[in-house]
Length: 387
Ligand code: A3P
Ligand code: MG
Ligand code: MG
Image (tube, rainbow, N blue to C red; front, side):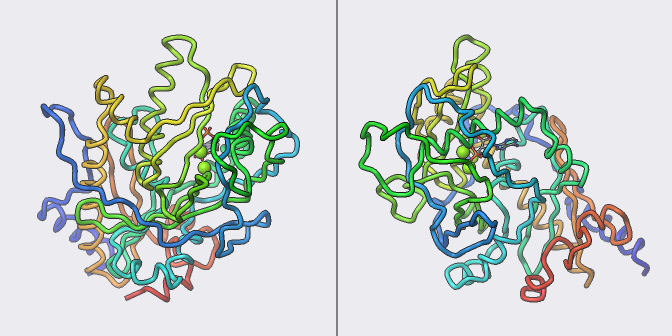
């Protein structure tokens, strides 16, 4: 059987097993709350840092402690000193290196899914996303599904060439982080010291964690950047803090805008087990007007009361999505020795499609991107885990 015939045969077989290459979004025609699959409290297995030189090191040197930011502080401070990390592909490389460390290795060996938290956020919020689609690459290797974000060169260029307004707005978020954090823990609620500025922003520097969790019966390992921790730091997500900025709410439209962000705030923090999101509300002129800490779980409550969105629907969809993709890719991979790279594409309001990225197409070159890779996995990692 030639490759095209084999592919056709696999697709027909998958259809026969009720595994079409399409996952529809939930229809919301059910009544009453959904009973979502249980989500296990995420456990941190390892933390690591990126240095200003963007070197990955196995310590907490980039970890920051939360402190109250000064009010009325300008968020464009030191804008011209911003050391901006170039836009890059959402590769799994750093996370994969972490998987081979002693603290993670045994868990990695049993994982069903390995990805960044940002990817999981996209997946579980898809039922309510009606503007932006997304593309992922996936590979099923030795019983584990690896998922990365897919971005083309054109898309990266687009991100790099942000409009000046967008770039400044993006900087505000990092400036807020600088005002809200210190290298050493401070006692809670002391008044801000000096002008409270934490120094110029270098977005190469990041503190990251690797957690394990379960969604239903699926074992998931996620990597994520974490903004800061409380002074009671335990090493676990229950002391992590997520920082956000948002425009002050002056009218119904602002309120609507903030409410529409809550879903992302919730998903991003909940997936990692982060209990609190500190929001800096900023004025039109880019100053911190006030600061409010929201318990992550309150977002779901507020949304449910208003009938806006349901976190249970998100978890249910995430479970259906991953289960389907796992079955689909496991089946197909069973019938070939070649590494299959899958392209998973989400269209708002419609659903998710999955298709194979063919070796001999430009689409595949885009995945490997001239680097020494098997699909999107670094060769060294692939050689280590291949069956
Ligand atoms: P805000 O969170 O206040 O929006 P994160 O909150 O995920 O830790 O990200 C920190 C900051 O990075 C964001 O601050 C925002 O300024 C910037 N940022 C994140 N995603 C971005 C994107 N897609 N485009 C531009 N800026 C982004
Ligand atoms: Mg962050
Ligand atoms: Mg943040």
